[in-house]
Image (cartoon, rainbow, N blue to C red; front, side):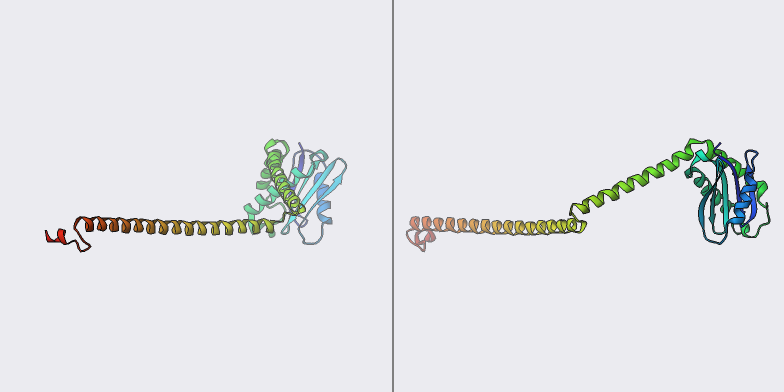
Amino acid sequence: MAILFALVARGSVVLAEFSSTHTNGSAIARQILEKITGTQDSNVSYSQDRYIFHVKRTDGITVLCMAEETAGRRIPFLFLENIHGRFIKAYGRACHSALAYAMNDEFSRVLSQQMNYYSSDPNADRINRMRCEMSQVRNVMLDNIDKVLERGDRLELLVDKTANMQEKTFHFRKQARRFQSTVWWRNVKLAASLIILLLIILYAVLAFVCHGFTLPSCIGH
């Protein structure tokens, strides 16, 4: 098991703790709590033989765990973050005035369950691995942007090129509509000219047949 001991405290007042094995982890943890001063939030780790004590303090509440050295720091601090969230959700402001071990009977079971989960369940590491993969994708995207900037293809220039292309497209469409209008009027004029020419020819034929421009013989009948 990677995580062997855990506790939740307010300052040096232990509110809940659990140990999965017989070690001096509880005594060392209390020494660490006594050494931690100030009120600032912090994430620190202390080495003791082949064990590492990981400490996370947030808003005056300290969560601490003792883990095997081989566990690294990622899983223990995920565990501490989870425990802090569960503890605050369960007790709220009461944890800032509670007596020593006031939450031990109930919350020690939560510590035990989460210690087992983060020590043995592969899903605990899988979740963090997904976070790491997402972070890597983000870094690759940022790196690609840096390469684009290094080539001189600045993003603002790309935006300008897009704007120029849109403007050229607008002018092209405007010219195309103007050309279509010109062709339409030209066709109308041509059609009108043909109609007038046909009327003139028809009138000339009638004038010839009716023996005069006033069409006397035709009108007389």
